[in-house]
Amino acid sequence: MQRSKHAQEVANRFRELVDKAGDSLPASHYEELGLLIEAAIDTALVEQLESLAGKLEKIAHDVRNDAEYFT
Image 1 (cartoon, rainbow, N blue to C red):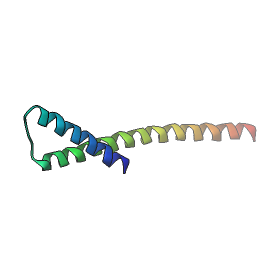
Image 2 (cartoon, rainbow, N blue to C red; image 1 turned 90 degrees about the vertical axis):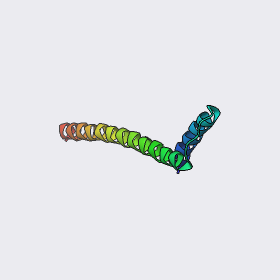
Image 3 (tube, rainbow, N blue to C red; image 1 turned 90 degrees about the horizontal axis):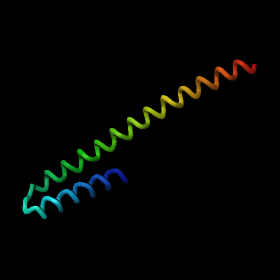
Image 4 (spheres, one colour; image 1 turned 60 degrees about the horizontal axis):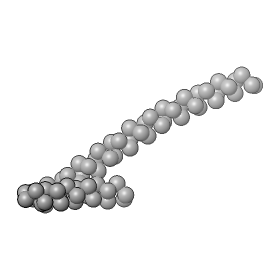
């Protein structure tokens, strides 16, 4: 999945920054960070889909009203 790959790339970039600063974290923390990032991406996508669904419902309602006008 594209989201998983992107989340892992962000976590890896964060690891690079931590390493460059001379610090370190266990690998499990970076794995968890990747999962948290992926969950955040998923949440943002769901919110966008819900917004789109609301717009589509309004369009469908408007089309029905217009259809009643013309029939």
